[in-house]
Length: 84
Length: 477
Image (cartoon, rainbow over the protein chains, first blue to last red):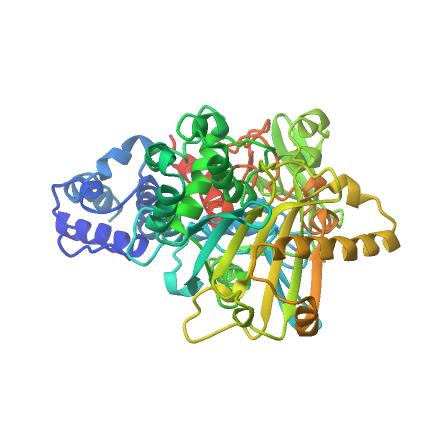
């Protein structure tokens, strides 16, 4: 899995939990919170959907790694690789 | 043989319990909702009588915002439960009114556009306009969903901005009637939740009423894999070593669960615990109950000039007193709901419906012999309707009587019977438990006594408690 694949999986999740957001022009290096109307409940959902769909665990102490698409990819890609 | 162990057991299939259940089932928790009655919905439910469908509880769904408005409770709830907005089929109100004075001489109109109320206040209370706007600014920025905020008196906070008691009472009347469990005052965080829900957001309902919302919740819960046992209440929560170890069901069987979420109220939950926590329950039991009359007409209310207002909050006295009724019913103030007056587009309700809600005394209704109870219902039905009609354009008694095809009424006794709420206290305990924690480490509260008010609030309460105590904690190291 490449980092781009990983970003795509995260976008898939966000599009399901926040179908009312426009995800077509997300800038990967900018915090998701600053581009989209996402609150802590939505971030919890990203964590829970990663577990449900992909068996990836994100402990509470690591939630901050999900701030931007870029940081998501940085943090999650090795976790996906470890599962493969 | 039914399963007897769950990840999460939820007590009560009302709005909050169903919402919690949907979240948990969606994320793979093995969850079961136990409901004593055969109908779901709890405080907001529906029934049929003589072929007619009735709603109870819900006058209007609060927190309505138009499509595209983000970040409000309605939008959070839709996202969290994976519900598409269209599924609720919400139709916005036309307008509502706060009418004070013996014949409603002072009125404040409000709609789902806050600018309308803002202009009304400025026009009718010009000297208060600056303070009103400071209050609104404070409400907009206040963190009302904080799970550990310090309690403040809403009366005191509002008085810092609004010095005219009439205006203060007119603001408090709808906010209290639609959610306050406390007499005469409320916690400021609760005030903010309700102010936003009613005035900054607004009212809507599905054409077919609350059953549409409950049906959506049931479908989501079922398709997520949740289990539901109806006519199967929990009669005891057995405590062992600081945990809710077992639930004893009404049929005597037992189940166990890692987590237990109770939506039945704080004192009610304390009384389910074995040993019973009577002192804690008694120290935080609500006293506010209500009656509601429902009149069904074979005419549309608009024919009588009753076609504009969706909800009318009325009070005839110098001061508005939100407190336990001294008589069986306190008809000085109340709420009128005309469900016909939502904007249903090209549809309309087939019959005219006129509902009146007033404060009532549980004590004075609870112990009446059946014959007296029925007679008193009749008497107070007429008194409540008569009081409310002062705030609507006049219609001759004979005209109304000729058009009336059915009536019904609930009393504090009905509320106790169907919801289990002690004292028939619809809005539950006066002190809310915002973080949902109890003396048992795996027993949490959601719903009315957690304190997010209104039906959208109730659903968000279930969501928040499921998130906070079960889902999020499962990611803690």
